[in-house]
Length: 409
Image (cartoon, rainbow, N blue to C red; front, side):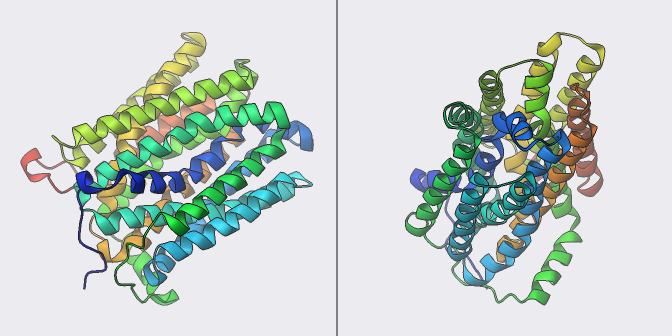
């Protein structure tokens, strides 16, 4: 039995639908990136250490990972829009709580709650795309989402730096609450329901679905390879403010410009991906992207260890490594979810949980091993890049011949 409306193509899709969906997806990077320029100030305000400050990121990643396991089956059972509305309401309340947090411990717990609300948008958006598109067009739509939502990593640190400079760190969370309100309004008025026939889901059946997905080698290969590659980016996100502000002595504003430049590279790569998909299957582009990420991560690590090029020896390969994720994220997501149209919510949730579980681990490790140099960050990015290529090779196998590779699933 089909659980989706008639399939559409990328060319038939209204751009306003893509923009609305991407805005909701952007709540993740907005929540992560907007307060990065204020991290050293947060540490000083609460009189704590770097590791405790990093927990505001690590617990956010854990919340994103755990929460998606709930929203996935829920969206398969009651539709896509209702879980989105529930999640955005939680997110708004938690964001306001963060603005008035009395201690670092309270802020950490409220960030966890903020993530448990915000992750609804990530699950629902991918499930909506899977409801409406076949795999190759799905990869194109996800590339378009990266373009729109990619504005968030560019604008968020810059906006956060300005808001912090003018009004203090509390105002950043008030701004995030307002952004959550915008996402709630989009969910109410701009996004029609895409699930034609809800799937009856109990706790037992949800667990069975997750068990089947965990045993599906190709799903795990694509989900884990894409997630581990992104783990390198989250290691960068977790400690980059300390590396560039404390080690290389950039101002918070200059750091936000550098952060935005890396996000711009990711966006450009995502748009290149849409063009490449006209000529190559998604899994072929994915393999190229993962190998590129591993290569540039290795170059960066060697440059930092050898002290070659100063800050430019770090910035240039970092830019290229982060940019390669614009090719890997859409294609790994599309390939992982392709066989699971009737379980799109569960597949989207588990994929997100795996990805942000890796992100939480890489962020915690990067913060734990941060030693006042750029070496731990570079080492994490290089290790994640290499591991992602190995995971894809082991779990999915070698690439098929190009004429036989039209279906990325």
